[in-house]
Amino acid sequence: MRITAQISIFIAAIFAVICFGIAITGFSSLGSFADPVQAADAKGFSWFWTFLGTVAVVLGAATLWILRTEKGAEVE
Image 1 (cartoon, rainbow, N blue to C red):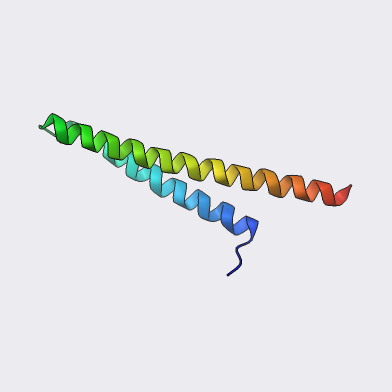
Image 2: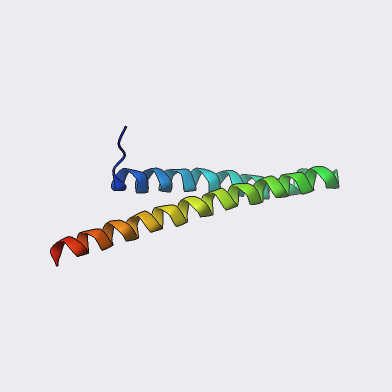
């Protein structure tokens, strides 16, 4: 299966939105935990999803940069 650059940017954006949505849900639910261990685990879980979303954004931006650079090289 071959994935084009435009599709990979689109997939990275969707994945980033999902990851950040999970992270926001996790951070917003921190107040509902009475046990500090569970709250710390939930905070770590939320930071993990934030990290995954950031990786998706960086990879999508790098793909976009490569795509624009490649198109610029074809014109010259």
